[in-house]
Image (cartoon, rainbow, N blue to C red; front, side, top):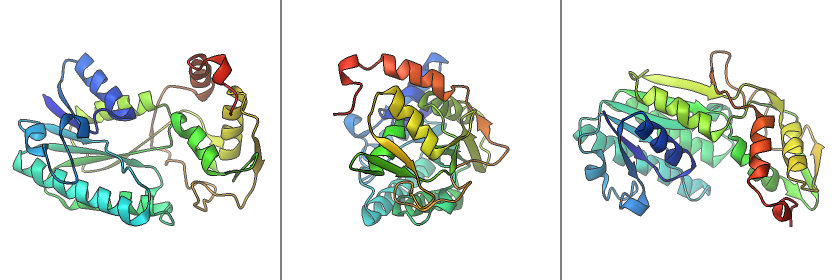
Amino acid sequence: MKISVIGGTGLIGSKLVKKLRDKGQEVVAASPASGVNTLTGEGLADALKGASVVVDVTNAPSWEDTAVLKFFETSARNLLAYGAAAAVGHYVALSVVGTERLLESGYFRAKLAQENLIKASSIPYSIVRATQFFEFVKQIADYSTEGNEVRLPPALIQPMAADDVASALGRIATNSPVNGAVEIGGPEQFRLDELVRRYLAAFQDPREVISDPHGRYYGIQVSERSLVPDNGARLGEARFENWLIHATKQVPKTNLQRA
């Protein structure tokens, strides 16, 4: 089976490409670095030629409302058009758990627009909605930092390791299309403020996390369950504490404390 991974050199894409190749699949890792541009369509015909499956793990370079909407709508339209021309039999797209609950954000409005284009196309599809990745906990903290304080709501979150995201995508890509959405998440739920507090402590980051019911997640007001999947979600294996132990070992001790 030939599988084209669009965004194949990014965090998730690179892991997915390796996992698929390790299982003997023929994989094209497409990205701007390989001459594939989803906004212009450049290189898409060659990247999708002969592919049975296309996996879209692209992400927008800008989260500005107009730019991010243009990116996901244009990329999806181009990928769907070239995919149909190449007779691709399964379109897999990575999306986000809770997208329809987070529409205060232009990013999530753009992701929902992408999902709707995929659903309306003629290609059988699987939309994989993932919870937040462990790898982006610092980014959450940075976004909500003022001075030495990080203000976050105590909403529930069920994060997962990027490696588990890639594994789930690989399993779904090599099976029949579900023609709907599949939710994936981590094996544990946390309070968002506590999750970030544990992360910063592990990396000896001196910032103080303040639990604030009015705090925001990437600037978005969230409710108790905005960020968690339904009960039927497929769960990854990596636990946050184990991931933290591994992650902190990869960082030189002189770099652990925040500058």
